[in-house]
Image (cartoon, rainbow, N blue to C red; front, side, top):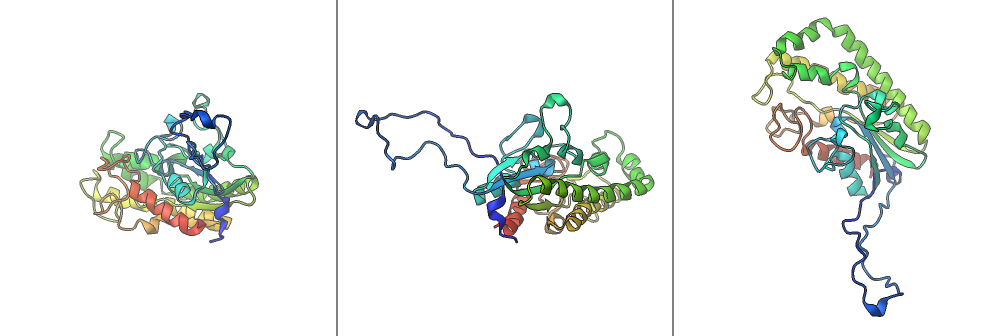
Amino acid sequence: MTGLVALVAMAGCSSSDGSPGVVPAESVGTTDPAAPSSEPAPPSGPRYVALGDSFTAAPGVGEASGPADCLRTDGNYPHLLAERLDLDLVDVSCVGATSADLRAVQGSPDRGLPPQLDAIDARTGLVTLSIGANDDGLFGSLVRSCAGFAGIATDQLCLAQGRFAEDRLVRGFDALAVQTERSVAAIRKRAPKAQVIVVGYPQLVPAAGTCDRLPMSRAEVVFVHDVNRRLADALRRGAVTAGVEYVDMWAASEGHDACAADPWVAGVQPEEPGAPLHPYAAHQVAVADALETLVG
């Protein structure tokens, strides 16, 4: 919207062939400006930093890119957007990342993963932020238990959280909205001229009903859908309060949940490249489409 195409960042490409090739004897000591280069041209666009968790990292969607622990792939929306707009990309998204990992070392010190905000400096022209699903067990651990990954009867743990943790969920998502606002402020402090866009979460499960892709009861599906909605809304509220643009993937993914005919997210057993209860390539393309509209 602000026309800040000249303001985004991601890591450049590497050469596929570093050999100098065969040089004819008569050309030794001279340079032919018309000769094709074996090195790819560096990105001409602005520096783009992508901050986020697994919904940004997109495990399984493409080829591995970055630290092995992060399960980041080159099929994620930061890579797609950078390729389309020729941006200089720095993608620090990582599976399991929390809002705390924006400012602190991610995981154990021996992983060697610095705070995600360290990737941002005054040269940065664009920043996308999508993080919070793993904060304090608000959503990530809840979905794992409701989908049976905890190895126990799902109703026993999943619905118990709905009955006894309502106050904690309300407080947690209110805190995430505030945290999102503070994260935007921290980004702006490091890159005052950057365009900042918060990317929301998609719908994982239908509003009602279930399917073979989701080994969950109807009551569990309703509960997870409601918590999923609150998660997306927390990021939206944080973005609005911070005064930055927001990509509403909750609305965009309507009719593309794990049970849909055209799913953008996997069920418990992915049917195409991706991770359980995580985005497929179609979701990453949809996010890149929305971002291109805002940045281009």
